[in-house]
Image 1 (cartoon, rainbow, N blue to C red):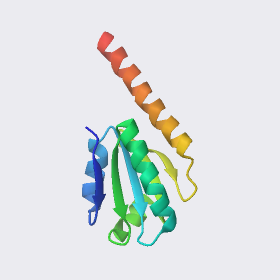
Image 2: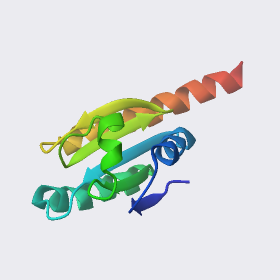
Image 3: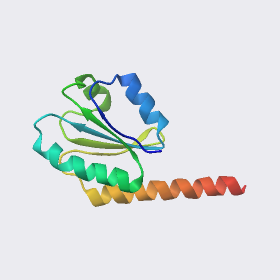
Length: 120
């Protein structure tokens, strides 16, 4: 079941476990006072909800230790993981249609492969 979480502090290990526990996961990195972040977040939330995908919002001001491991040097950054592997990363200028298309494709491909496994 998709989750929508806004995190204050989270360890790298907790974040990695959360990513691994989701089939498809979106991470949205933001900073306080970031106008672009404030404009993008409602659209990212709507896409996650529409696609039934888990979303975690991470405030970099409280989680600066994640910048290096996640290779996030500015905000906003949107990352998508499929079965623990990063498949999408965009910064300030995100193509929301491309994001929706990618999520739809990965969900459909996964359902097809699951169906094929069950038939054999």
